[in-house]
Image (cartoon, rainbow, N blue to C red; front, side, top):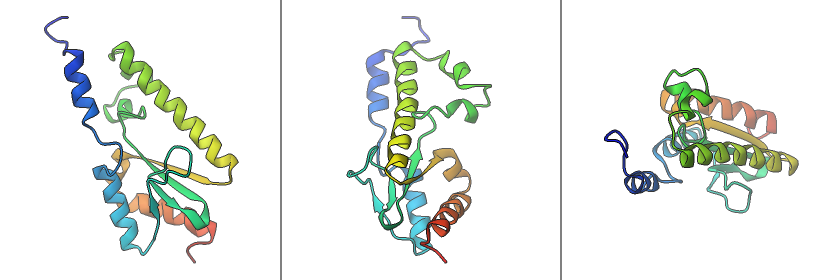
Length: 148
């Protein structure tokens, strides 16, 4: 291991401490939706992928995807592609991120086949402008008949 590389045990400890639910961006979005009098379920275990936010009556689900974990970090860092980002990752993390992306696609397809509308919002978009994210969700809910 070179002096620049971190011990894999240290990396594992750091990464495993990152929460998978009730993250700051997720809480920001939920609070903003609540202020708009939009009511929802959270971390809905009855559906594939355990969506972060679910409007059950209208069959709309929202995932708040972390940029690193779901393969969007390259865009945040100003790189040209996901491949360019992953080139600097260890084999373990490269495979993990790619599998997360594939799982997201599988979950989207499964939910859509069950009649759900799937919305995925990047953590960075929520942080940048939560109002725009809420408005996008409101547009989908309006089309679904929840908002008039």
